[in-house]
View: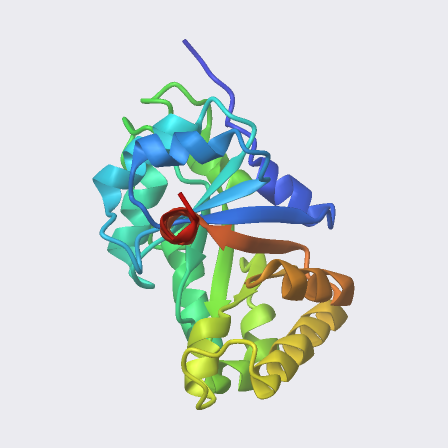
Length: 254
């Protein structure tokens, strides 16, 4: 039975400059992902860089959230063509590639997302991405609904921001404030004034280029970044909600 290429709601909203709020998911659990999928967020980040998660746990998470009106974004552990290929084959349509330091590294991520002759993605016909061979013209049209976000998270990368953002095939740039804070000498303090200033300047630079920009930060600073021009922001994480909620409950009077 022939099927159409699935639409990427996140990419469509990104292109329309609509504000999208998200939640970081580090629990590597399909059950936990489904529990938050119906909360009302526009997107969920399924993290495999700073979590125990991998391809198989991410597959289960993608399956669990598929029934909900929320867009899953997958963060591979590295800017690695093999990892990117695997996540695309299991049906991820939006990837957040971490630690992109230059236009060359951004170009490598783009190449990993695309089939030859435009890129180096390996070809497999019977995958979840192709609805197991049922999507018509998948190999010539897949790029239309794939979305690449690159993560800029060091002072050195900020110096290359315009060059990174200008790479054809980069759909958005994500500012990583925790690693940026460490890079600027303020590890563990992403709200240090120097870090805040660097993030705000980066948002304004990307807005001037017309390139969508996102961030993971506190709700208050997310609102500030959105006011400056950011279009997608994560305002919390499942692991933090669990740990902090447990702390609050345990500290509450009986």
